[in-house]
Image (tube, rainbow, N blue to C red; front, top):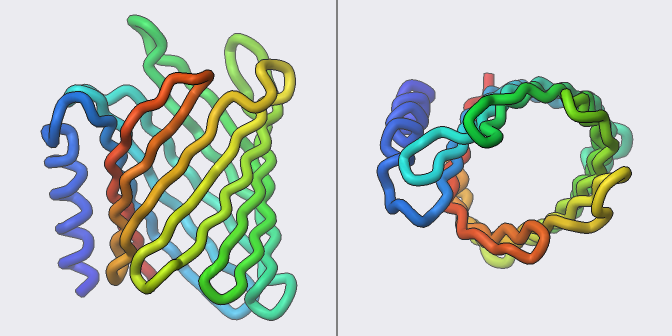
Length: 190
């Protein structure tokens, strides 16, 4: 089963850039290990537009079970490579997560310190998701960057979680400009 999921993940990351030109494509693959008291995960995400990669990140994080599998506090680190004009820039992001889960509802708040070449900035993200009928969910995420335009980005998505795969369609609005995103997220547990 794990070999099949890994194969599907690799194939989707190869095929995803060729699916339609005007839709942004995101593909990610994560490995996760859970125990009673914590969840450890690491992963990579790649984003494409018109068949060309424009963003990639690698992340590692651990979330600690604070209360009865419903409330978690976590720490993590993400390193990002982003295309800006004709060059690529690197950004490092240490982060703190607070996650609340209850039945089909999940809320994740994240505070990130974005270490960038053109100046560091704090970012707050809050994502709420609700499973309507298994396996279908809807989600809304808002972003606030302190030191620049405060609330400038939000994401509305609908998706399907099947086994270790999550396939979603998202509308992302940044400073009034909206784009369509088709995404595939694979997770393998070890």
